[in-house]
Amino acid sequence: MDLKGPVLGIESSCDETAAAVLAPDGTIMAEAVFSQTEDHARFGGVVPELAARAHLSHLPGLVAGVMERAGVAPGDLGGVAATSGPGLIGGLIVGASFGKGMALSQGLPFVAVNHLEAHALTPRLPGLLPGGAAFPYLLLLLSGGHCQCVAVEGLGRYRRLGTTLDDAVGEAFDKAAKLLGLPWPGGPHLERLAAGGDAARVPLPRPLLGRAGCDFSFSGLKTAVAQAVAKGVAAPADIAASFQASVAAVVADRARHALAMAPGATALVVSGGVAANTGVRTALTAVAAAAGLPMVAPPIRLCTDNAVMVAWAGIERLHAGLTDPWDHAPRPRWPLDELTPPA
Ligand code: KG4
Ligand code: ZN
Image (cartoon, rainbow, N blue to C red; front, side, top):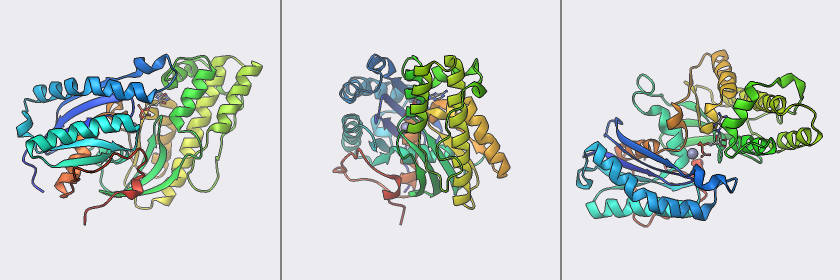
């Protein structure tokens, strides 16, 4: 399908409200993210009802702002793409309804974007890699809500190779951080604390390390951290360092297995907030290098939740002639392997 103008992307699946306008070739014309972290921090996690209300109050202003900065009037757009799952249903309804309303009022095509597909296609954004990442590649999605190894074989063609049996990796960081008395979200705080610690002082388990496949499990590690903290076996910095070393070792091991399950992969792509962690990044760079592949991590602002990736997924789908009907219902659960590839 020929795109007659830029695409507006909307993200509202968790606690980031975001909007972006991208030219049909993927050039970013304007982007904005409003993070609700402060609204939720005092509750120690995302409160769905508060998140939905915050999306409702921030989204119209964010969209108006990016449209103005991009110099684009609603009628100039070529399409609207809004995250429609997986995620918290209240936020999904806000973003998808807003997107549909805007598309309907201007007679534009609408794309109901799968949030995981948006993360998966981010490395194909022009400008990140020369020519963009070529299919197939291996995606490691390491965030607070998602933890999976996915073979990205083409637009709409994803093979989930492994996932977590309990907590997502970012969730494990947040829980360990909480046990260590750090504020939420704890990943970055834990990384800073770990920098001054000695990982060798506290032996912690490395769940599923060496086990066949590429699933993850973090609950045993979390319990071990709880016990180490309760018994006061070492300084908090040492426990943090050991926790981070365990996670990095496990993630690297799982990535190695996943690469073996995705023959022909042209790159190892890491996305999600945990991709910001230096220990995890270093371990994964070594895994990719050993396989003779580049390790690609989009810049952090494109790794964490944003609307650039949503607009880009919309552009890829619209170019392939894929649109969604007005009655497309947002889906709190929407696994990647239930997507439709182009005919
Ligand atoms: O992708 P993201 O921004 O949001 C979603 O979960 O969708 O990821 C946030 C997660 C949080 O659990 C946060 O603690 C973790 O990523 N995180 C980190 C670091 N920065 C963010 N974990 C470890 N080290 C970091 N530097
Ligand atoms: Zn996400």
